[in-house]
Amino acid sequence: MKFYVTTPIYYVNDRPHIGHVYTTTIADILARYHRLCGDDVFFLTGTDEHAAKVVDSAVERGLTTQQWADQNAQAFQDTFAKLGLSNDDFIRTSQPRHKDKVQQYVGELLKTGDVYLGEYEGWYDAGQEEYLPENKAKEYEYKSPFNGKPLVRKKEKNYFFRLSKYAEPLLKLMEENPRFVQPDVRRNEVMKRIREGLNDVPITRTGVGEWGIKVPGDAEHTIYVWIDALINYLSTVDTPERIKYWPADVHLLAKDILWFHAVIWPAMLMALKRPLPGQVYAHGFWIAEGQKMSKSLGNFVDLEKIDRHVAEYGLDSLRYFLAAYGPLGANDSDFAEAKFISVYNSELANDLGNLVNRALTMITRYRSGNVPSANQMDLQADAERVCAVYQQKMSSLDLGGALEAWRGLVTRANRYVEETAPFKLAKQPEQSARLDAVLYNLAETVRLLSVLVAPVMPGISRQIREQLGIGEKIGGIGEELRWGGLVAGGKVGKLAPLFPRKI
Ligand code: MSP
Image 1 (cartoon, protein in one colour):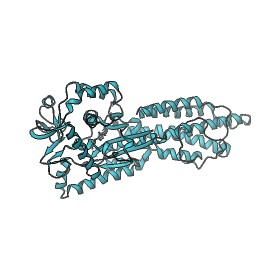
Image 2 (tube, rainbow, N blue to C red):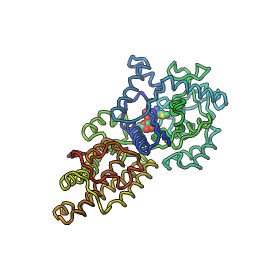
Image 3 (tube, protein in one colour):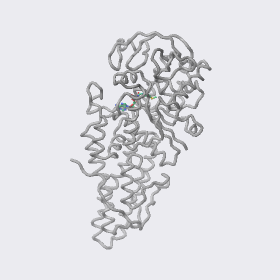
Image 4 (tube, rainbow, N blue to C red):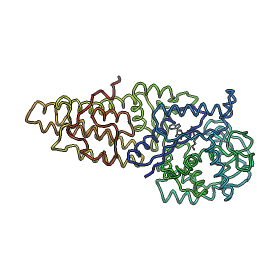
């Protein structure tokens, strides 16, 4: 099977922060999971470069717009590379391969009449570069809900997208396929707003200079940055070699930009007569130490802070924290230092680290490092149940649930050590077969844990497997998750603590 996952393409004006790193990390985990399942994966991220503010900031810095965009796009690419994110491509909307396709698709829509020339007047939020419908503008007292600045009454000749035509098809889609927009609360919000009515939307602006993509055949009009940006998901794979990946299986994003993804984008695809994505998943937000992250508070979990966490606790610990306690689902999550440290110490250093260390140390000490064979499979049923739950949770994007199941197996195995007390068995020669069984059950559970955790903590998974004396490479998930895969007689490797303890 193929699996195509996307992240939003990030505004090239911002410096990367935990929000961008989060969505991209979650996409990375899904990509790695599906690769493990043997799927043909395409994982896409990139930068959204044609916003008007990019032009302004470049001027302020005495750079050309392209130079400024290049610098910042590079910062995103460097950050993602440093964090080991395994995206298969990085699309920049200023690249010709994207611009050509945008013109092609808009050209198609002009032909069918789904895009037409008209006049628009409305309340414009300059900071967001979007018009607000009258009722919303009134609700916010004609001020931007994002930065509080007054909305501007603006009138312009524009090309419009015939969104009104797609209200019914969109509702039908969401009714028939409840998984199309997730989580459910978000889906309900979107459907409620569609039922309130959909107007045609302007998709071009005039007088914005050379930066951006022109309407084919009408160079006075520049395609609105959001329309340009959404198209990246298709433009990147609309080549003979890559079109097999379309439609995307999951568009990952946060709730701030759900409307564009759940309504405008599928309507555009309907108009283009292209297959629709499998799912639009809008997660919540990270806040920092209990407060919304904002420019004015200057409290972003920024790159410097991310680097510090990676240096101190390791990249995989950060990934684990993001996946286990992040805002997948409807709620926001708090990036709090104390919580991070406590998760690191208890779930990673104490529970997982100790289990691996105890199991392998005992094999080294009592069996000269050779994995014994077992005549009883005490942990098999528990392990199999956890593997099944984990797979089901991963497929439904419940990473927190998958890791909770995984943790359940760690806890079960640690309890098993207490219950069976191998250190006592080791002193009783007549219990030798029993000790063999206990050690095998532990080692095999550790092996399964290394497979399950590979998408989230690839480095830790590799280390566990090296210490267990099995190849770091993981085969197909079906085979790997079969109990009994660890061969008796194998030799464990050199042991080292996985997670040095922190105060
Ligand atoms: N350029 C548009 C997206 C176009 S996609 C066709 C954009 N860019 S953005 O740089 O503002 O990125 C927004 C996305 O970054 C969110 O949807 C989310 O994926 C991520 N995050 C930004 N801040 C976030 C948090 N505080 N918490 C979690 N993720 C958030 O919008």
